[in-house]
Image (cartoon, rainbow, N blue to C red; front, side):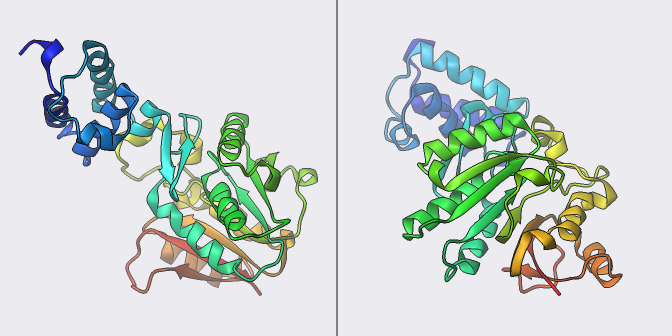
Length: 292
């Protein structure tokens, strides 16, 4: 069949076959990429499967599929990713927001449910997805005078977080700090009710999916079995919290015994528990920390 008369469905089928060995979500990837090439919604693609696709859009789509076949995340190709029902701008300067990280937002909103004028510090904010989602939800609930500080050591990441704050209309509730964790103390305004973070937690010895090679490596990998940055947060957060304040930190699978031993040895005067997980399996979770 002539390229100019190929249908949307045929393009999707062929692209799905091409991505089948490199992506666990090949069909979804092709639908999202074709929608982006056409400048329409994914729903529009799905109801147009029998329609012909223009040569121009097909050419753009083939370029996207080639990038995806090489391992590049779909979010970097399209420049955005959905998180907590909101669309966030992303680039290779920030991690791709992932659905499991929404657990931090869910727990944060539960903790802040009765807090008047809550103050939140989002450390290593990246795209800003965690802090902005929390702030957006608080604004929807009618909270007033709440504030979220978005902190990152990367100026490029902070620039993207600013774009996302503007995109979702929460600029008046957030401020931005360039710092590596707690190093730039003068720019912070404690005390905070809650500190949230998705720090680097991948061990350099771990085998990871190929697409992670496209993401910012210093936002992924951490020394000390992947827990060096988590330990910095746990050890240094207390002076920045209000009494009974909480820290929520995303941690990867295989870290629990190391963390239990670390707390048991007294390196951090805190109590830790795992959010939303009632099994003994050492898997991905969110660490909730309260200080003694």
